[in-house]
Length: 141
Image (cartoon, rainbow, N blue to C red; front, top):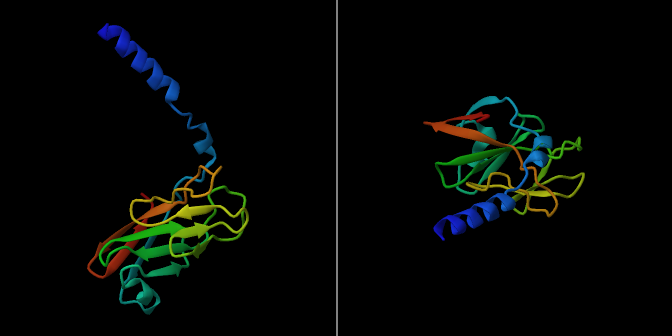
């Protein structure tokens, strides 16, 4: 009986597995190594928790957000669907929006650029942010 139950659960598990072929068409992490000091006047708005700045780096620019005063997240403003020449815009304080197709992507700690618009599967590109003293280093993972 236990073998039959285990076989049934295994079968159900394999049927529910999704196919990741669609993710192959997504833009993968882009090479990046950007360093700046928090004392730089350009980053003044990123000094407070919830603050952000848009940097001239990455493919179409980078959104750098201060999560809680000591943690930062950064996202490339290139549209994940690869079909837009305009950079994404930061709207409502919580999403990046692609101007070409209206798709939105969540930003913030632990969100990972997840698509917020139905029918879109590619996430926004998130970069790693390391803070050492007052220096921020933004790199691809």
